[in-house]
Length: 487
Image 1 (cartoon, helix red, strand yellow):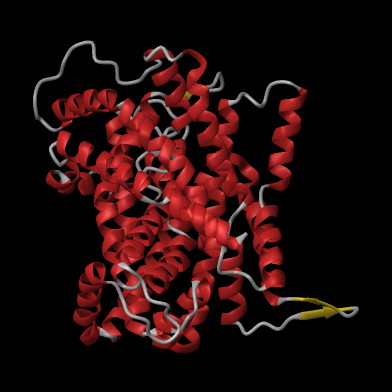
Image 2 (tube, rainbow, N blue to C red):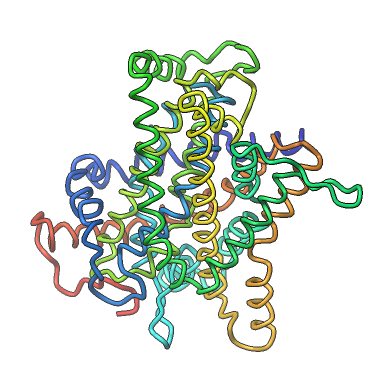
């Protein structure tokens, strides 16, 4: 089974998807005039520069831009940035980090495009709640505008299956459980001759916390995340900067290792098995997409609920999200692991990240990382909860008895898969292959979503042209331009 999963992962994250991601990224970059680079200052000023204001936003929507970005960042900035990046360095070598960065450069424009389309094609419920995302722009953009009829359901179903596969296959609970149990040196519990591992105990507690956080639905999650996400991000960044300062003399060497290793591969060192350049590219791109979710189609499902006067204005937050997630948070993790020297130990996931911070700060570093991982895990689970909810809302599952049963079943089981995976993997001891499964679940919806946004690229460029003319003083505003599909 493991051999098959490795083969499938290699196929999905092989040349077809990598080529599609690169071609799509270059296409949007070139045709937009390298918008994410030339207007990077504008993006930061009108996104990160407004974070402290917590503006309520203009236009229709049920979340403020601040709540939307906190929920989206909460879903993306999580265990993937810590355990995922640490595993990428261990499996692909330091060179994988460069490919992660390069993928993020293109990912900034890809996420801007998908968020823009998500807002443009969103739907408004009778109670004023707004929902959107890939399945919405597949229905309206492909099914209605491009006259696909019911054929739009084919990519929508494949996308939906790919997204919901992450509901059943997740490593966030396991990763945080490993870190917490290790940081606090927790002991296993024996009851009647039956042993309950410490990781499983922590996993159950995390699931209970997730149930509590998500009880209020999308609005409740957004309200909680607007308080949690800024705190967790700042604390982790401070820890990472401190780690870099402590090892400041070794930083130039670490960066050189990243740059040279990206094109030369890495020979086997200690427990490290060695990595070819092709493997590093695959690992770097997969971890980049899993970490910042650019092209995955997830963030549009929460950004579409934001109050915004223009779809592209919300799309800017998508670009900021990728920048912050990869170039700030992921880079801190990567440098911390490389500087600590623990990446050659043979450890992966949360255990590797834990050993890296323990190497730099001792017990205090381990405990702080454990606390951060708990918050990251809950926010990741909560963020994904809103994504699943957006898809279910699109299916109008709140109408009828069957719909109510399905929604109640979803709410009742929303945190169980993580616990079950933790129990299975801890009991079997086969925790390494979970990241292979995670990569598979991210590849399927990404392939479908990137293909679709390419088909709908014309609408994005119309909106971008209008936004530049309306707010940036570039060009002239064309009369009659629709800013939202429902208009």
